[in-house]
Amino acid sequence: LGPMVLTTEVDGRSIFYGSFYIYATLPLALIANWNPLYMSALVTIAQFISIALASFALSKRVGRGLGLLFFFLGATFPAFVNYSNWIWNPNYGMILTFLAIFVIETILRKPKSLYFTLLGVLTGLTLQLHWLYWLVVPLFAVYILGKYKIKNLLFFALGVGMGNSPFFIFELRNNFYNTRTIFYIIQNFGNRASTFRLPEHYYAIFYPFLAYFAVSLIHKQKKWKNLLKSFLFVIIALSLFASLQKAAFGQPFGILEWWGYKDQLKTVEIISSQGEEYYNVASVMYADTREYPIRYLLERKDQKIMPVDAYARTNTLYVLSRENPLGHAVWEIDTIKPAKIVRIWDINGTVKLYKIERIKKI
Image (cartoon, rainbow, N blue to C red; front, side):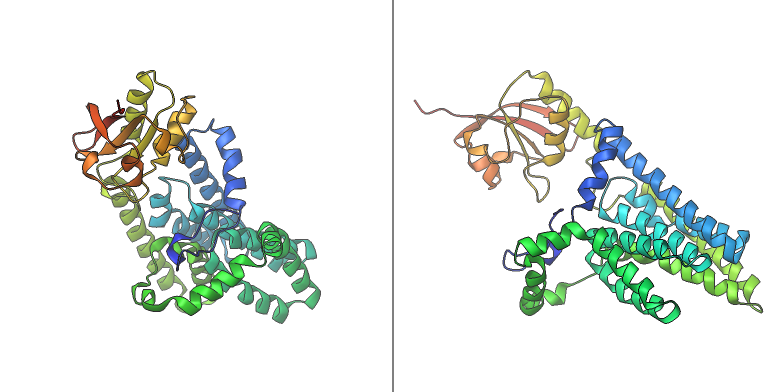
């Protein structure tokens, strides 16, 4: 399986994404030598390629002009600029959605069984990345059944099974854990339903279809076609302005304003320069206090850092904090107490790196 869907946790139970996210990231990591910045750049390039392929296929039906408009609608979408700062499920999801549009256009020209299977595979892979994408499956099924033969629907279903096979296999081997958990969450959501919201990354995966339908509808218009094209130009201009503003002045989703990649690299250089072995790291700046980003970068430098389940055995702990971390009641720090701060480094004027050592009992 892939990562846990933390936003759906109820009574300690949560559903999981599929494993495609991990399998898709591994080759990127190998190509980029595990450098997260280069990996993010490769995903961004893949996004543009998928948009270009969908635009090329669409232009054969609606014309080059509308095909280019579709390309710029996709390329200037603010979420693409925002998500280019990291690698996450929605990145792959939007790539697969544009590839699905490419296959749909191919089916419209040549409705072969192979293409229906390929559309199903892409759908199955996307289901591993985003639970809400299940809303698309019945729409695809109804469209295929209404316009094509039932055998093509069966090929599509076969493709969905192939693309989402890791998830289905897990369900069969684990007594349908995710399926049962979904029903449990629905039954016990309770007061949490009042706080339910849809952040951008929940619905961004559907945006390519909105652009696709908009261009397709404009193509069918005769009287208002030029006016609607002009309206698309305005939308593209606004999207481009919003994207440039976001890139220049905005903060990516989930990224702290006063904490960036360069700060992380500086922290790693300080820790690794101490020449120590068998230490641990933590942070009190955000919810996950185990500090996986710094841990990952340290492991890339072959540092002998202790695992996340070894805080109780740690004698030296490096902590990122904006103030004295010993005053924070977090498990990673509590397990090393009684302890003392032996050194402090200023990272960026806001965040400091504290070196904490356990006070040994005499």
